[in-house]
Image 1 (tube, rainbow, N blue to C red):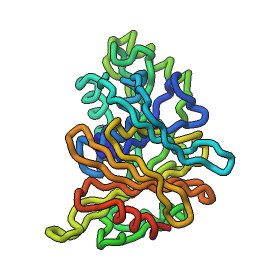
Image 2 (cartoon, rainbow, N blue to C red):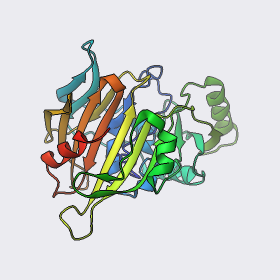
Image 3 (cartoon, one colour):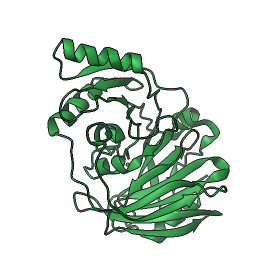
Length: 305
């Protein structure tokens, strides 16, 4: 859920046109997205750098997979993968991340941009993409944007009430002419960053919502709901860490996973993932609230439509 809870903001959205993953199938590398969540910024920036920043600057990190858990479709193909891995070393420089954030902060809600930063952090000369969502502080305008894809609840089981939400849109990640133009501008004018405003695709890939419990009550804290549109994606992948807990669960009539893991700041993230093949989407219920249990998250997920 996101550096700007980007998280994962998780996250998401979404990736740059990198040559070490299949852009055509839009493999959503949520593992990078989840790192951003550990920094605990507000939902408004949750998707800020998202997966893009880490992917672009550190996309070749090696993860030693110890065990892989999967949710599969009726064909037996893995759609969701959770890997328990050793913790990789961060590769992005703070300067690169700051430059990316500054460029993103210059955008208005609903705007997107392609960003290129030459240098040792980006040896493959990748161009990344970012989108600043329109934040909705009530459910009716968000529901209008989402349409029939997902029924946005005003309140979750346990008394968690809607705070805000937004929709994320993907880009065309393969634009060689644009990339070449940006590369040349950076080289000829000795620029550290080149930014081009670009429009995302019309069909969204994710819906994010934030819910809060009553202050001082047992339900105090945040609950995040992420609904991913799996159309055009090959699979979703993330990492739980070698000390994480990953268990298969049943939600509604679907198979899902419960994942609990420690974030970089020491907090524990708990979540339930539910793959709904008939609706071609993935539901995720995520919480950093230590009072919330696996049972609580399953009860919330059970009622989502």
